[in-house]
Amino acid sequence: MRIIAGSARGRRLQAPEGRNTRPTADRVKESIFNIIQFDIPGRSVLDLFAGSGQMGIECLSRGAESCVFVENDRRALKVLQKNLEISGLEDKGRLRAGDAFDALNGLAGRKFGLIILDPPYGGQLMNRALDRIGQIDNLQTGGIIVCESAREDQIQPPPAPYRVEKQFFYGATTVTIITREGEGA
Image (cartoon, rainbow, N blue to C red):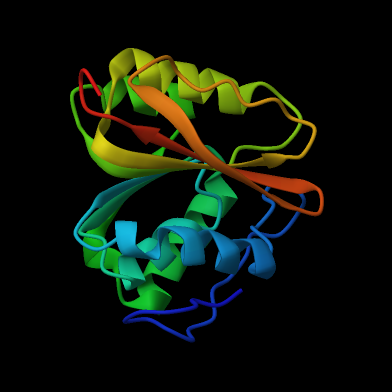
């Protein structure tokens, strides 16, 4: 795993041991960042289900203002902290240990320009997270949510003003881009 572009380009990141964390495949990661590259600079990012932190760290390297990383697994959190240090971006990252839904509740009232959702495949965590994000409405107008899921998982976006912008398929992985439009759009 390496940082593709930006201020920390080329730095190698660590991955947690074991099978609890599934890092995004390099091909999928590169495709995601080709899609959203112009939506990153200056934005605040929420990396929910952060794992090693590679997605949020890539955003910081590409000019995101800040990133909140949420991760429940203690081993993954230690690796994430190390990866922030390796990248030299630890001053822009905030770690929140614990359950993603408790973290979302604690972040109610805070708006993000970019939210990254990459929970374990095959469950309802993605749709639960999208539902909660819609309820607390913590995506800025014009903001985007990047959802990485298994191809067979059915994504259920929050109701308007949220909408699915695009979907991309990479083997067994689906990337769904959801945007938040302005009121009355």
